[in-house]
Image (tube, rainbow, N blue to C red; front, side, top):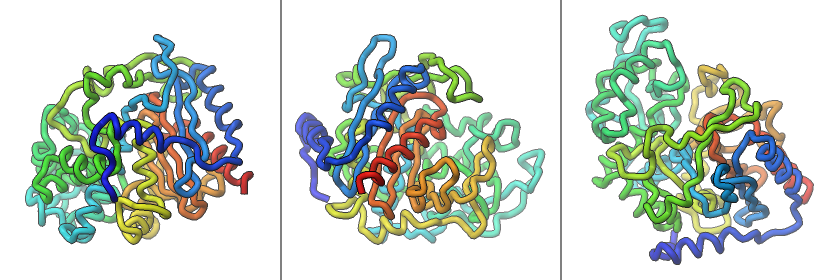
Length: 416
């Protein structure tokens, strides 16, 4: 990759120039109208989106408000809490080290982080942390990248032994460093044998610590030097500078956790904790700590598409989009259960078999998103990619994203 302008103002100007639609003949009005209806119905405060065919932008749109109370219209340069979209940056950071030969996907984690050797695994149905058996093998780097390591999150499985342990021992405490987090994890068992299942977890945070250990740099410095700077992602980082805090979009919670389409939004700027993203903290959360903008996310996605300079080698990108899970293993969440047809690559989920909610074009799609509704996808088979961003709590699987992607794919299909 060639370096983008290092002057922040010049880089931001270049990023905005790169957001111009460069391919015409696509009708996205149905997608725009659908998102506007959700804004008008008080289900979303605002939503911005961009769709690419090849590396060309075919649609850029903003609807609604960055700040509903202040009636601030959402603009392309507004800053979003991207939460788990951070994982794409962290995965790319690790893959850069793989390309340099400093890391292998089959390396055991204890080669670099000795505390995580000799894992214990909770027995099925365990009622305490003492009910364990030895791990049959080590956690590999590939296991971390594909969320098949046996680590947990402590967010999605209330009432379980491991949920209680992760929260009592403050695994996610933002006042602690990645190194201190690993020390806590060293004393906790895994929830399944490495490589045998899938569970969303702190694995990407461990991956961020791994990048620190191998590179000898704090994680934020590494990604700034190797990813954010070269790609001109001038508004992406762990903290919003004071001069830019007026561009941070407001954060909202929906009216009903069970019914995502129930109208009503409540301001919740102090989530996940008061002052989040407004000042530096020790935890450089590789799994969910970044803020970003639509132009920055488009720059990152574009850097993974063929037809121009790419952040990673083509063969690395192809491997990233290859299912890493064992036969018969699908993604699963405690709330939704197993998701048949959903595999996982090295940087996101894979739609191996589209569900009834997906457009048929979604087959082979690599995708992921954040809990506040910032999502990206890449469809190699159809040469289509996109980013959609909002700030509504618990919107990783919100119906709005399924609807937008279906309509976006349909717009591309009609133009062909």
